[in-house]
Image 1: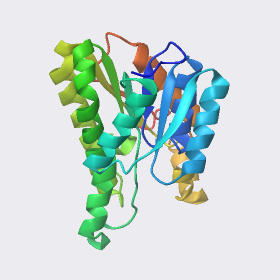
Image 2 (image 1 turned 90 degrees about the vertical axis):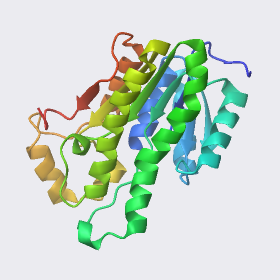
Image 3 (image 1 turned 180 degrees about the horizontal axis):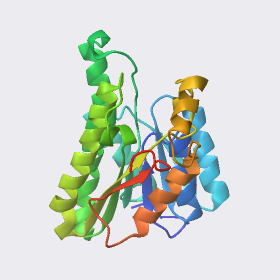
Image 4 (image 1 turned 60 degrees about the horizontal axis):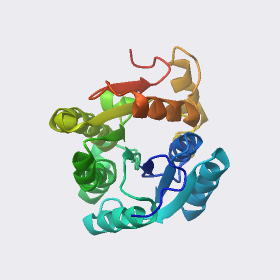
Length: 248
């Protein structure tokens, strides 16, 4: 096992090259952990996240993988284990959105959204759990969405996948609780990220207006929730909504 250079835990953040992923990685770095930043194609974003982790006081490295492929997930975990040790905190943050009418969506597009958002989380959970169970300790955080709690028009596949993450969270919390492994879920609302920027200024303004706090959230506010859940040792199977009151 590689030396954990900070003396903290080994944290794997999937989708770590995006706005929320970068913030979560940096927040765990500030806690003194070793953070593995996963990315699919945005290497520059992943390296920026690694730099943020190191500046915050943690150890960070970037690892590429296609999260929806079993063999890639196995290689990802093997590489992280060799560099940092077994994953003790898994943050399933990798996500993919598709906007449009369900009747215009192809089967391949449907499968891609579910594969990245839901199947990828399943593969990572399955790969991470054996070492967590052996140690009778571990934390899994699944990043869902407020649209997983209440479906969004023209985002049927995304809503279905994010709702599936909530179900996976609740089921695994019961299944793994006796082994000392906690599984929780974060459901962000409108967050100021490049992914949401594609919605356009009018849609973003309408969503902000429909939020009781009258603004979009910041990636750092989602990261705060992730760090809290990593510490909350008597909290499992829960969905923590970080949405400014959009869904009450």
